[in-house]
Length: 295
Image 1: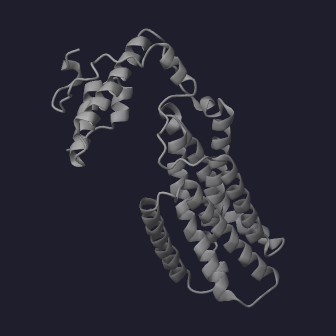
Image 2: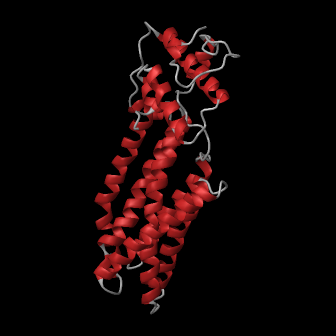
Image 3: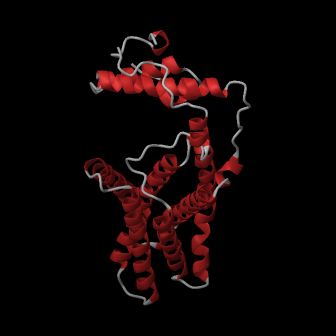
């Protein structure tokens, strides 16, 4: 009923177990056609050959250094770390300083929680229903909405306008929208970084998430210098983030997740991994393990 991740099983060189897991998953959606099983066996056979070629070679121990091993990885790591940090500053800064807003603190907390659930459900529906609604679109809209809301509160505070209801709603909406950024900043890096360093990337950026949590309660201290300054600061943080994100990060929705580090694909081809060990014209059976198939 439940299987280990095929990706993990392949990494651990458990090819037959990976096949059983993939075939079992295929039964759920009735996709175990002879053609699909043939493609599956060819793919797993290539992985088996790659492992044979790698036998006796020292395995690379990937570290946090590899998050900055090339220009793209470095820019992604820095951007997502900054993104999570400023998202925490904005989200928790507004929540921890909710007494600055009109209305009951308890009611405001309920409003923020309700908005977060509603926003996440709507975004999940859009993501599933519309193929064109990718990570960049949702992230860009969410962060721009946050920047716009904070900019509006800044202008209201700057000119001393008596618009407490608008200030309250926009500030609470900005805090609630941050939940969508947290989700996207968990999904997008996972789709950008190879399996070997994916967990290290998530751990690295989550460290800056916690740093943002530490800074957040103090963000309104600078309001003692100038009352609108906290909102202006958070607005500028958000504008910088959304600009950098749309400029640097490619769309990842619907794209294959990278399995190997840059250069490993070329090395695999050089070792002849692409050469199949089983006949292409054979009819594959989902009940027959790969190791028992006749060549």
